[in-house]
Amino acid sequence: MSISSGYPRRYFLFDSFKKYNCLAAFNCDRRDLGFQHNTAIKENRANFLKKIKVNPLNLICLQQVHSNRVYLAEKKDRGSGASSYASAIAGYDGIATRDRSLPLAILTADCLPVFLLDVKNMAAALVHCGWRGTRDGIAQAALDMLKNKFKSRAKDILCGLGPSIRSCCYQVGPEFSDYFSDGLAKRKGKIFFDLAGANLKQLHAAGILKKNITDSAICTFCRNKYFFSYRKEGGRAGRMMSVIMIK
Ligand SMILES: [Zn+2]
Image 1 (cartoon, rainbow, N blue to C red):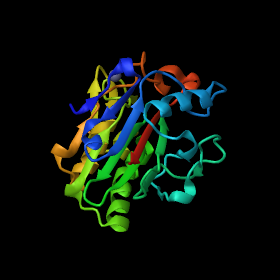
Image 2: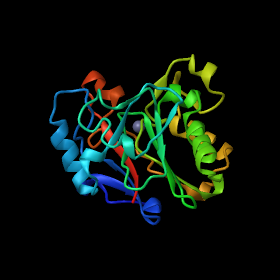
Image 3: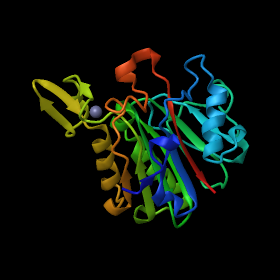
Image 4: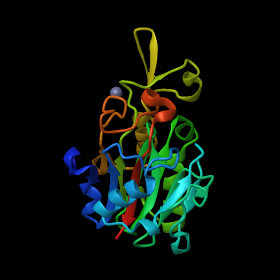
């Protein structure tokens, strides 16, 4: 699996992106990087971003709403959501850019971060995929934006799947069969949903090549020692940060 660094270094990098001079990283040290709680967010962010060599003042964050909308970020957006939730860009769950040195971030605690990079046109996107966004095609919407704005072709797009709750632990209600035609498994009378699998299906359908996809295969619920899990911890759960930046 082309993902490196490991737990001792407190964050993961997708090596496949690094090869193209694109940073694609997420933290795995249970430092809270979201604004939900009154913890040392500023300090935690500074610490993580220093390690991955990102200027914390430039960070662009979203006020995520489980939509299928993707925001096109430009230099003027630098610092949106860097120091307060209120200043983050509201109403989107995906963010894309072709500008260099623009660090795009999303925050998760069970939802799936999907990293995308067009290696020909050097355009990047980062997507927050919960079940609602997945149902409404957020990954597909991000690919559409890369295609429409930057003339990206599916075969040139690298993809990385970050940590999320996986089918081993993601128990859902019977209503999920109304939303998803597959990706549901029954075990001992309980229904489990494969969130990563449902997104992989969208990516494959859009023409992304299997060889260009790296899945971290990390379950946030199973690996709760290193990752926050909303399912496991409820309202107390902090947030991991995923960051993408073309250097
Ligand atoms: Zn699990």
